[in-house]
Image (tube, rainbow, N blue to C red; front, side, top):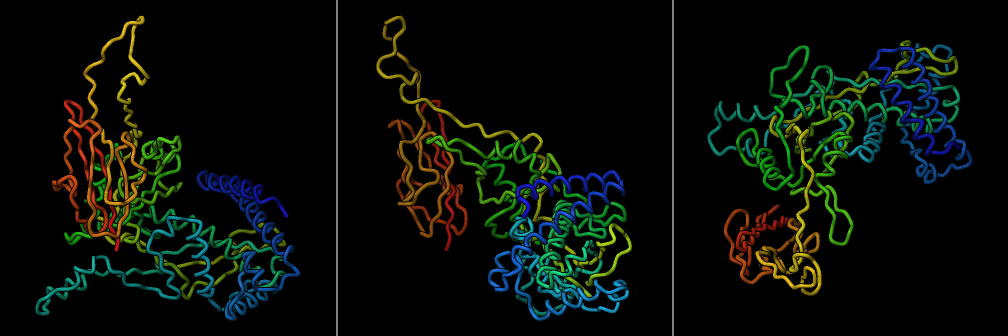
Amino acid sequence: MKNMDLLVKQKADIVAKINQAVKDGNEKTFSEAFIAYTDMLQEAVLAEAKGLVAAADNQILSGRGARPLTSEENKYYQGLINALKSGNPKQALTDFNVILPVTVIDAIFEDLTEDHPLLDAVNFMPTGALVEILVNTQDGRHLATWDQLCSEIVKELTGGFRKLDLTQKKLSAFLPICKAMLDLGPAWLDRYVRVILAEAIANGLESGIIDGSGLDEPTGMRRDPNSALDPVDGYGLIASIPFNEISPATYGALLAELSVSPNGLNRKISEVIFIVNPLDYFTKIMPATSFRRPDGTYAYDIFPFPTRVIQSVYQPVNEAIIGLPKRYFMGLGTSKGGKIEYSDEYRFLEDERVYLTKLYGNGMPLDSRSFRRLDIQNLVPAVPRVFVANDPLNVAGPVTIDGQPIEITGFEDARLASLKIGSLTLSPTFNKSVMVYTVSTTDATNTITAVAKDGEADIAIKVNDAAHTNGTPATWDAGANEVEVTVTNGAETETYTVTVTKSE
């Protein structure tokens, strides 16, 4: 069996060639790269199958990626094999009016969400044979009204829904199948079909979800679904917001915008996604969200609020998307046309035929306020604030110059000696020179106790922007609460921030 590391590298090289051929419009290079790609996949599946010839146990097959098939799936693949082996496969497939079973599509989605975090984050729905679906574009509170039923309320009720036509958009995937593949039987043909479709769907969906124009493809998160649909460019882009630093103030301002629904009501946010190009992640996001702990280890992806960072090559460089993942709806499945067809578009080798399947679906943001485009080209790295110990020169004993002791004055320490919130454990562990912490609790209240390192320093505490007395219990709201402890000593001022997340 071929080394899997070599297969992974070979796959990456071939995919790069295919992408470049598409950009260049070079049909010859595309055909050569596509042949190499399918040969690689077939080689991997064939090698895997040969290693399991004697293994008929379903549990072993399942462990190798060959699912135990349902009776409907087995019937479908057996019929497909017979059609593909016939002397006239095109006519045989025309007479073979069996649609790809919805359970196969479900299995593909399961594989996708494991390997592609963006597809796992959005509101994904396998729709089966549905051709139209209604989605609720407003918050539920907007749809319930205490009043007499009248035309205005009926208008409000119906105005919160949008009908998506799933057959208007389709993903087309080519299935190059060699004759040797047909001899493996239904279970391995299913394995191969799912591998090919997963690759095609993953790339097509991720591209559409991020930047689809809404013309013959989904409407992406970068787009405003309420803007005018241009016949050439599709829906307009959401206005870009300059985002130059990741701090509680700047991040909180962004989240405040997301927390207001289109109908003007506030909505609770427990987590956001932050989509960024891999190049920007390593050159901008990682430096802006990483710091070295006192023990020498590094913490990374440290945001002031629960944030899931997702890297995607389909996200433009120097830009990021922040938003509410479940406010993006994506429905995909097979309709009456969702069956494998013989394709004359590509002719490669005599022993390898190319077939085509179309998967129908559509997707869009449910409103124009759930996602924001961020201009991150000027995002600054996180700069750790370093403080010296009480001895300003960090040496033991008296400070001397040429053997003569000198007195150092004017050094004022505005740090805390300790910070406690009840018996909760701060993350990271409290250190007088670390200013940002997080903690989770199920308690309704906890006592906040802050002790200054210099007994002459003043301490001021705020909880959710409201003044709070040091040493007394604070009452938490559900979700994130911000505790701000400001220490003032002469001209020096330092501020510690603790995000307390209250869960049920």
